[in-house]
Image 1 (tube, protein in one colour):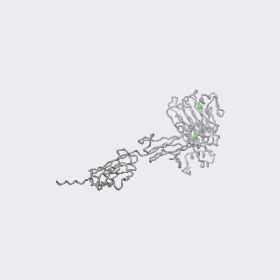
Image 2: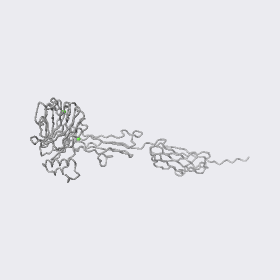
Image 3: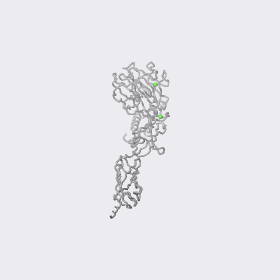
Length: 480
Ligand SMILES: [Ca+2]
Ligand SMILES: [Ca+2]
């Protein structure tokens, strides 16, 4: 295999190894075939093939083929297929003795097979219950694979999940094994197998779940079946009942999902972090805002292929991989949608939010004013300098400073307003010749005021008054 290009996937390598070992089909298939996206479990209404069975009614649907039928050890009732163990029988290597093996032809395209099993009476040592793939039986001609939940102890302490494939009556060198002892013996087990529909040597990835299908644990690597060894049938299996002659395994359903039969789009959802706007008024976010997108195609849907998103109602869609994070100020309308493996696209959903700056603290702006000279004669001018500080947490935006005189007593000459622009948090603005104030000649008073006003977006107005001393001529004392 040393000449194989390094870009080949592990599955291709294993498939090729199987093909070379079997030496039955052209290896070129393995080199040119790119499998479709694999199906995953879903909703019963969405992608069930005709071989699925909910086991309703009181008798086994005649669509099932039965190998070594023992009618007394099987029944349908109470919504389940009830199967009893039958001595020390098995399906492994040259042994093909298990009774009541139920089989149907599997789809030749990609599919996901899932079964739900009540294992509450499957807790004696070596009891095996699960799924079998079956092509043929006979001397040197045993071709099948069992994927089973195996109760390892009578005490209920341990179980394991196992996969044993037999090709031409041998189960050697096929990567067979179990997952090792796992604590406990659950009352309910799901077994699932995903096949990629390869035209010659489809792959089969087994997995099992003991938490109602929430968490799936792969049972070893995928195995491969050579179609040239016979039509691939699959169904249900019990084996190794010698310690549990009265035990029963109950199959709630047997579902085979074919992605092309899925006509139901995934359901989508999002979460936003923080969950509530953290701006002071609770109407907007200060940022950053995290958006996590999710999609579910149900228990027997074909599975979510991708989630896409964009900001706004136009533009190209981005494929979602990780949680999104936004920090820039603005109004957001995050549109998103999900597509399943059958190509069904969900309606567009929207996550809307705004990121904005907080209003400035009323105490954020500090303003000091200085007149030079401080004492001004009527008819003269004085320059007014100012120092503006921003001690708040937020930037002061569009900061503007304006000065106004006092009626008849002072007047601003020249520019009356100064545009400061943005004033950073903990920033200062200084202008020693900000304004010029004129004291009119007509002012006979001793004081004159100048009012300076600071405005900014999202900030309260700050006003400060500077009082000037008017230097009036001293009246000459009349000579007596
Ligand atoms: Ca059922
Ligand atoms: Ca679907």
